[in-house]
Length: 549
Image 1 (cartoon, rainbow, N blue to C red):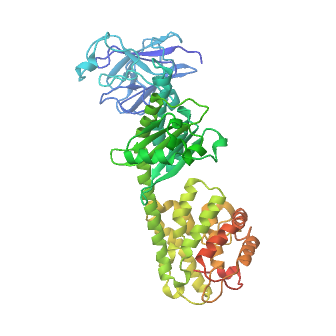
Image 2: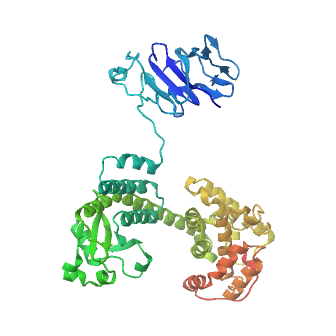
């Protein structure tokens, strides 16, 4: 469409002297985020009208406003009305005039961005004195209007573009680099999800901007009060087996509560000869204290090698500023992680409620959880799915709290009717978890861990990947533990037979991908089994195991 730009010129006293122009569209309304022409007047609806360029020319559309949209005194009815030069547009009681300018002749130079500018100095009704400044003081390119609100500029940049725009002008190169590093560190604190990812992001940026050969973050262990390596970043792979940090300097930094610069370790005999420094080929070291107003958290350790220039004062101050900038984020992440761990522990304790009632499945949930987490890691599940397994697996049998004791504690095999009643633990478990908003994401584990790959499971007879991956993982872990655990009416299945049974039932009972991954984990699975079991038993059928409580 080759059409002129439209200009709306304020005529009524409330908007007199204001101009809005655009090449494509102007949306008129009151105080909403997606409005271009903001008019703070009770007669203007939040989404009042829009002026749009079409193949037929510029048109105005009323958007269901309360007090109507008018062109030259006539109400806009139907879908739209074509606009002509010098038409009078009225929105509620506010009036503007329509004019057109050739594309490229915009007075604002803003292209398709809706802009406004004041041509004359009259004060607006109800405006504060400064809002009614004359044209000499009023900057061009106002985003919105009205007498009550002026936005002097708009932008829609990515984070990188925003940083570029504020750090380059008038700065020396090293100042620009340092400012970018601080801003990037602050950005990482608010964007990165897990504590591990946060630490790695901070460290990678620090190593890059300070041109270190290696970086390490050490945080204090609350139980031992000793520094523990939590994250490592290397500028090149050849450093992988050559140390991580100076233990002496890091400890001194943390204990003294001060950031330290050792520009040249070669002049410090004790430090230069230390095993960690020598093995790591460190010649220049910065230890920046990670601290908040409340506590010391640890140390940001950076080093350079013999082929690099020594760290200077500017780089030391930047490292210290980085450490101070990110510490509050690290502290918050630690608090969130601690709360998450407490939640997981609470969930695990809740899961053990079933074991207290069912004397024959003691420690079943803890073993199944270990197996499920191993399998999840092998399958490289997402962080969200890992969290679901960690929280949901201990609760996979929580519905058994609603099963009658006579059935739950029966020392022999269940009858058909009893087994049907036992199946309800999946539905009951899902119902229990639905009452806790924080546990809704793990409902599929409780409800579907007895579904089968061929669709013959329960309670919903879902087939293949109609169930979630986490439920299919728990199904394998749960069945394996059931087969390899003693029951009053049978002995545990030997491990060889249990693994063979899983392989036999892959593609019918179980997701074959999960089974193959679980079998590949056999050494780790057997290690968990040895830790949790004292004796092994004789052979029995999987179908019997699948009834186990």
